[in-house]
Image (cartoon, rainbow, N blue to C red):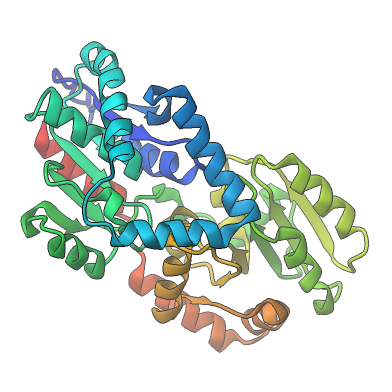
Length: 376
């Protein structure tokens, strides 16, 4: 049996953030690829090292805003995008976090630090400026748009999803050789075609004789999930709707209650660790356009219906995916019509899958892992 090489260098430290699960999922996808190369890694929530009040205000404030006043969040996002220099509070928060990261970095002695959230990118830029300018830092952007909060001159490399994002970084002064269009890293299993859809449905106990519509609200269970399944009622009984509600228990309860009035079978799940199986088993996905969820669907070549994007990065994600032909963006009143078009118009569904195959990057995690390995 061939032995895998064991690295004698320090592990790779992944700094994520606890807003949703996408940033951590991206880190774990790359970390898995590094592990296959014999390179150890650890994923850490960077907010643990921020000021307690700042961490709570940012994470809870973000979740609260996107749930209740998304337009306010969009205004803040757009205004921050036009800022050329970091404000005093952002500099203070980054430097405070950098000081707290010293103990972790001293203990771990990482050979590379990988940031999958803009906040951790800012903190590590401050860390390099204050303590160790030679520690390699890699930024992995997890949306189809790059916000200026990601961009720092002393970050050694960036992995981005599109050529347009690379151009935006270059315009902000980042040298072209530091930026590569690798894609958004997702688990390689989303592109795995070794199992048939019927076999996966049998495993999940889903029907083989009717369409399956997957409805997702992200790891936080945000978005108008109850409204979405209500909108599907005109499609009649001949389908199964699977709702993945993430960690939002209140949402799961409300969907279960609402589903009693609808003609089709509804299955309501909480947080699951086998989203890949449900995507590969489904005919269409109805979702908010988070960067990781949509990238997973692209890898699975699963037709997407994008609903109610948050202002800011999700709005940009939706625009990009619709322009690529990989997703539909119906109005709130046309969700059922869009789902029906995918389910009952094979040519329309085929066009969406072809577009997804054209823009997907199922090997992004492996490509990014190879780049990280070269920094060690």
